[in-house]
Length: 299
Image (cartoon, rainbow, N blue to C red; front, side, top):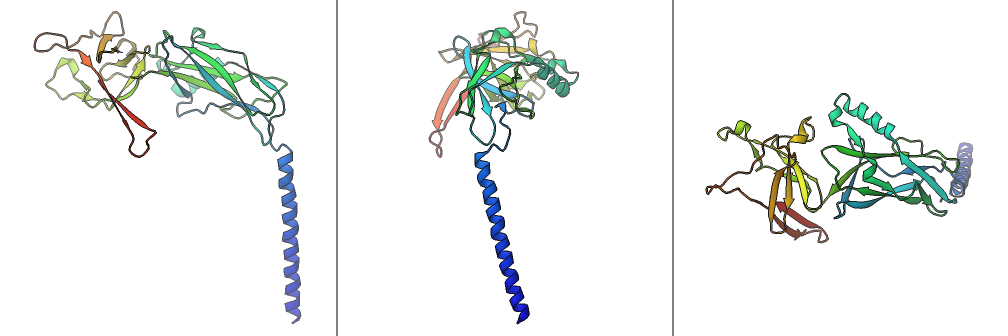
C-alpha cells in the first residue's frame, strides 16, 4: 500500500514537470514570432544547375531586346521594416574561378563574359520598400548579333553596404546568369533520321545522334552543328548550318561561315534541282491536362 502511494505521488510529479516544460517551450515559441531569430540579409534568387550557372530562357523579340527581372530577396523570420536600395554589379572574378575549377585547361569550353553591348541595367540598385521581402532588378538584354557558338554568362554580385547585410552563403550573394534566347523553332530536336556518312560514302552504316540542338540567330533563324559536331568540339565554329524558317513552310539552309570551309552544299534531286527543306507544325492539347499544348515541329 505504501509503495502504491509513492508511485501515485511520483506520477503527479512527472505530470507537473511535463506541464511546466510545455509552458516554458510555448513561451519560447511565442517570443520567436516577435523577435528576429535569424540575421536579415539580402540575396539573389538564382539557383545554379549542374554546370554551376543559372540558365535564363528569354524569348527573342523582333528588335532583339528583352528585359529580365532578377529577384532580390530579404531573408529572415520577420518582415523587412526598412527601405533598402541593394547595389548590384558585374563580378568577372567569380566567372573566372568557375571556369578554372570546372573546365581546367579546356579554355574552348569556358563560359564567356557577356559583352557590355549586350546588356543594360535599368538602375544600379534594386529598391525593396519597407513591408516587402522581395524586389526585382531589371536587366535589359540585347541579343541582336549575339553569337551562341560561345556560352555567354552575366556574373552578378551584391555590393557591400552599411545599410544591409549580403547573404554570406554560397550561391546566394552572387548570380551567374547564362542567357539562352529562344524563338518559335529553337530547342532540342529528336534526330534519329539525321544521318551522317564519313567521306561521303553511303555504302557504310551511317552515324546517328539522338538529339540536335537548334540555337537562336534571330526571331526566324537558327543554327545547328553539322554531322556529329556539337558545342564540345574546339573547331565547332566552322561547322554550323543556318536554318531560316520561311512563312511558306520552307527552310532556307546555308553555312554560317561565310568562307564555307566545310564545303556545305544542298543535295540534288533526280532532275538536278536543289532539294528544298520544309517544315510542318502540329499542335494538340493534352488529353489529361487540357491547359498543356503539345507543339511538334518536323523539318
